[in-house]
Length: 81
Image (cartoon, rainbow, N blue to C red):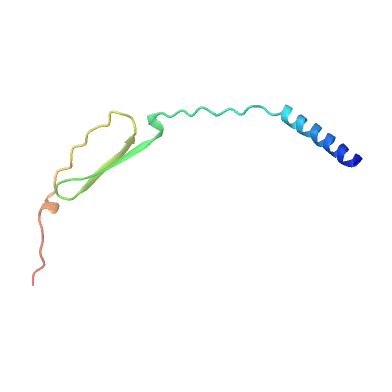
């Protein structure tokens, strides 16, 4: 019985010492600016050619003009029989 009481007193002392040394945790402030994120824009013109780019996620976003169709994308070739 004495050893149980001694053990409980020792554990109580350890627990109170452990809780006395705890410091409150602080959550770091997250700075979320649009320059740290990227948006990639992929588009297809009327001839089926892909175009686009990656830009910072800031607003307003630029508008994109489709690339003109090239002669090779307009002319269709067919194999001769």
